[in-house]
Length: 260
Image (cartoon, rainbow, N blue to C red):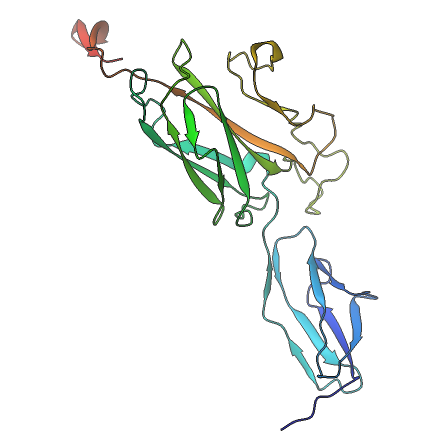
């Protein structure tokens, strides 16, 4: 049996000093802390902005031959960024104009500005102009979550249904000085409010009842805002017979069958 080594001062430091901080009370790049009655001492590591592996070294101050290093820690999961928000569907033209319950699988993927998947459990919410998204939210695992577009009423007169997906994240920017964080003067995408562009005029129209969330664009980079993507689904009607439309081919004009 070995007795615990109590009240020994241990120095903690990082192999890459600028990528994280140590707590409590880091000074000159290290933390000094005493062992407790069980011979144990702990520190915490707080990430900065750079995605990187990092190790922490522990060394007994009065006997430098007693030292060890931690397993590699990974700093790699940040907030979703706008230009790394992906939304895809198995079909954007489901048979749903006169049929309820036709499904299209929706897949959403969120990455941070380093191209890494966002933390598991990041929530994406959905709002649909018509039909349904079931469930209306999903949580990421390895940066990905899935849900379904399901045909039902309400059906817009033109059969075009806008679906909006949004989550808490940050505005994308160009890291011109390479310091891994936004610096005043760097270009960025000023997002503004989230809305469902039901009339497809690329503008927010409260009078038409378009869903709105978030804050107005403010000409400042926001590290906590709504990132978003919208897609349009077109409700097909397989109950209608195909109709002939004139088409062009190399031998002349020949009627070509086309279904709606």
